[in-house]
Image 1 (cartoon, rainbow, N blue to C red):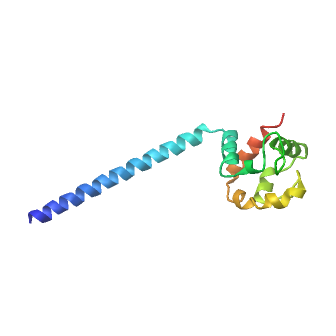
Image 2 (image 1 turned 30 degrees about the vertical axis):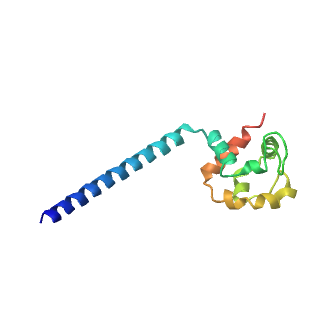
Image 3 (image 1 turned 135 degrees about the horizontal axis):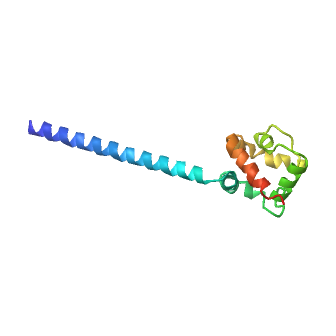
Length: 132
């Protein structure tokens, strides 16, 4: 009988401790995500995506053409032609900056099509911040 009571107490203690630890992790994660998301401007978020998971810097630099046009060139042409960058990144608009490079950019649509409208608008805001 003592063994059964001891085993029940250990199981109850372990279960309570595990639940408390899981609750602490969840509340910390929510706090971190909420605070960092609130602190970022659309331009900051766009820069983070552009330089991070978007992998845009592999082809686009701020002031010079590498594989694709520079960020400044993209921003200027989209502004001058009143283009819809978000539609292009979704794969729903024709290229207006450098159509000859479209096949290279098209391979990245797998990444950009998975992004939310908010993320794509943030990238657009970041790119447009380079227009003088």
